[in-house]
Length: 296
Image 1 (cartoon, rainbow, N blue to C red):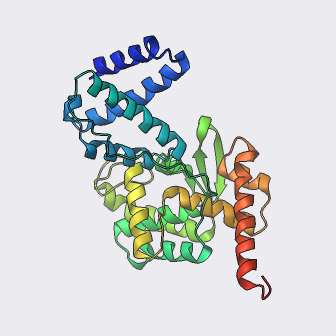
Image 2 (spheres, helix red, strand yellow):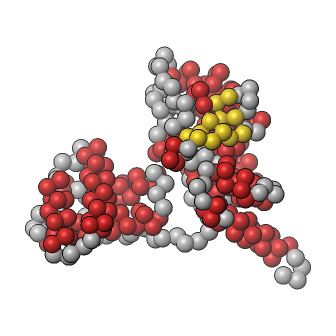
């Protein structure tokens, strides 16, 4: 399968005269697709179906790529399969009926504080080992605004219950110490004392959050459990790990937190990235004004 990828890249370089940078981007995108297919035991391009492509798009979404990035990757995939059909390698193109994800240029849509409360209350309804884990997980995410990748990478020793903090390793391997509110600390304490060992079932595992088999929780597992709890809580619209991060940032700014402090908590390298949440906060205030003011 790799040979066909190389043939396509050669075609782009010789026939299309694409730049070295563009070809490198195509290479990365197609190798990523190839690795995904091979992990699913797909051993030839003719064996790839529309379902495989749709599964790949979902895989990209669970890894929290920006919509624009996903759109670019799918465009590269479409070009590659068009090439395979033109070269006679394939009879049918599995990407024909697959729409590229729309690039959403709108501001982030955080949950309301009321919706967050309903979401966090769902796992608290039960005392099973999974519920204890999920309550600790959701409380931690809303308490810290951590990225999904940061949460699933946490080790047990990153949590300091006595100090009420968690040590997070973010992008560029930059470490930040994040505070925990009391409910998050209590939820983590319950999980560590009553739930985690039951999930491990004797396994020696350093990851803080583990699945039912005692192995580290995956991005997809995190994505799915948040979706399930959001549906159970009756929350309308898509709720993802990043939704909790959006909500964390927006609610802090709504509550009067400074932009610099929120930047540091989120681990943004540039404050311009954080400033988008000031626009969200302003939009929410305007919506409240329009709904409440008698002359609006």
